[in-house]
Length: 163
Image (cartoon, rainbow, N blue to C red; front, top):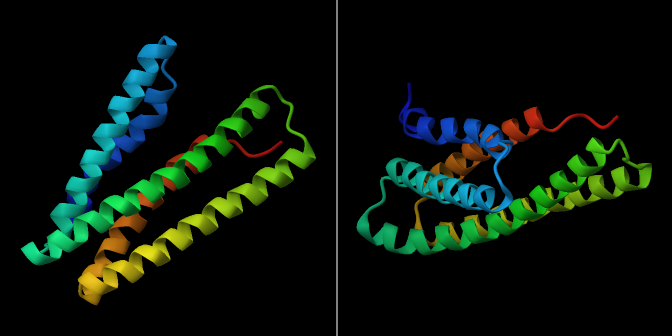
């Protein structure tokens, strides 16, 4: 098993539990508190996975972590947009009330979210290219891509096809 896979296993397992955790029948306030705790745990675990795999020297780390934090804030905004779309779709799906115009708009919005993610990735790569070697920059992007692939897999598995 490679180093990245070993170090991401707890993170991946947490992601696997996230949909089930989100669907538990808790009262509204405790669920929000529980979800916030889960989000914080995932955020901390992700940072540990990145740190364990980047092998940064002290000077690189000083330059890298502020860029990382800025990128994570941008990803959080993008993820919120995506979650809002999924929640709107889920609400319409449960009511069996999805209209063609809504489906078109949500598809356009989903593409816009993907474009925002690509734009954010381009921006972070430009910044990282100034402070890291090409290999370390590429390694970080690979780590992000692998984590995102797991999240996208979980979402694809959880979101039913439009009927």
